[in-house]
Each structure stands twice: as C-alpha cells, then as structure tokens.
Image 1 (cartoon, rainbow, N blue to C red):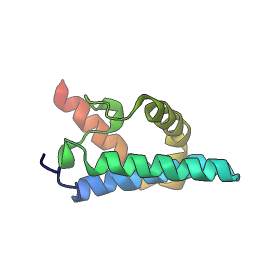
Image 2 (cartoon, helix red, strand yellow; image 1 turned 90 degrees about the vertical axis):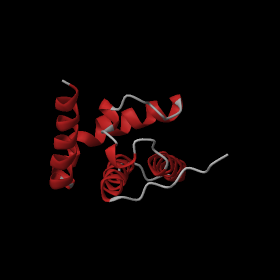
Image 3 (spheres, rainbow, N blue to C red; image 1 turned 180 degrees about the vertical axis):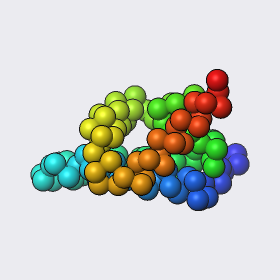
Length: 112
C-alpha cells in the first residue's frame, strides 16, 4: 500500500493555523483537565486529517468541502467548535478570518 504524502504547502498550512486558532478560541473557556485532554485530541485529529487531505493545496473550507472526512463524533465536535469560534475569529484573528471567508466564497463561486 502506498503511503499518502503529507500536505505541507502554504495553503494547507494556513488552513491548519486557522483550525488550530478556532480550537484554541473554543477551549479557552474551559480550565479543567478533561477539556484540556479533549482539546489535544481534537487538535491532533484535525491536523492529521489536514495532513492527509486528498485535496491538498486545492482544499476548500470544511463547510463547502464535498468530502466530510471526519468521523461522526469529531465532525459534531468540530461543528460546535466552528460555530462558537467563527464569530470570535473576527476579534482574535481578523485577517485570518477574512482570508478564510474569501477562500470559501471563491470556492462557492467556482462551483456556480
């Protein structure tokens, strides 16, 4: 079996930073060990999925991606994280937030 090459281009690295920032914003509200362990687990899982994403540098944002590669439990957790963190990204990471929005908009426009 061939091992898939790890995605390490500038676009996928930006996506990794964006997802990590959203996870950090969400888990900042919790102080207990259980949530700290959960944060590490979710972050590790998300980075692994991005490392081996089949779309690589052409990856759309998760919201408009045609392939939902997360396990159901992680998919639900990431939805919760993104719904909480999305609006707060404009406060904590405004440039990253705008770039993410533009990427999503361009992908949607390309499909029309």
